[in-house]
Length: 312
Image 1 (cartoon, rainbow, N blue to C red):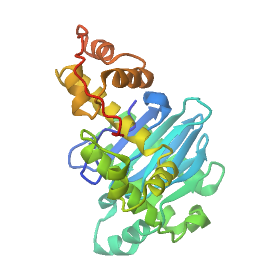
Image 2 (image 1 turned 180 degrees about the horizontal axis):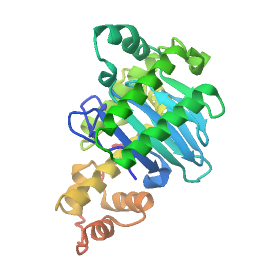
Image 3 (image 1 turned 45 degrees about the horizontal axis):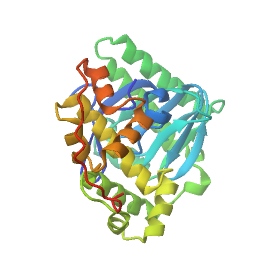
Image 4 (image 1 turned 180 degrees about the vertical axis):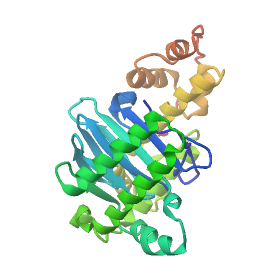
């Protein structure tokens, strides 16, 4: 199952490939085991995201704050907030993921001004625990939306949008679901993190040093590392390599480029290091992974790589 299918913009925000063109709505069920290390990539987008835990537990990060979610817990992440989920105690977790653009709720100027825009200006997320009135309503709403999507009846999207209006009204009324420590929060480190992540996603195929990443966020090297640890749970080096490996994996499946060409295009300048990292992350060599996905023969990658110890 997919977390979501996205394209990246230059600022590292994401364009969601919605279920139906022209209708900004995305509904999926998924499992954390879909991701390497049971860790989804950190991302943000203009859409509002509703996550409901179906079974298991998930550690969820929103702008650097970790939340532990259990069965029937829900979290609603506001527009353009950095977030990602990952495992708890190395165990899998099944979840429902519903994304929708706020424009779905704007039936007119009064509705937008009075009820949509004020919620978008609220803090980063709403935590809706199972057993509470708000949590039960959110879990029921998510469950009904998933059932409507699975049923596929004509015009089911109209019913989904109606349920989203009910959810939105509950968020508008329910300030208690906003953690007190997050109310009115405007953290300058968030802007720095987005700028540094954007730098990585624009320049991952180039020689990229820790100094380059820190400079993109207008912070020192040590501050850069602190911010990445806080918001991403990884060092800048780990985060960069993780994305480079993901791009390599995609190119192995989607193109006929050689392993050498792919590694070089994604910023890996030493074949043995690249192969070792790929094996550790995806459980196979690059050639073996391609053969398994495409049913093709394994190629013998070239050894013409240069050392670049100063690169991240």
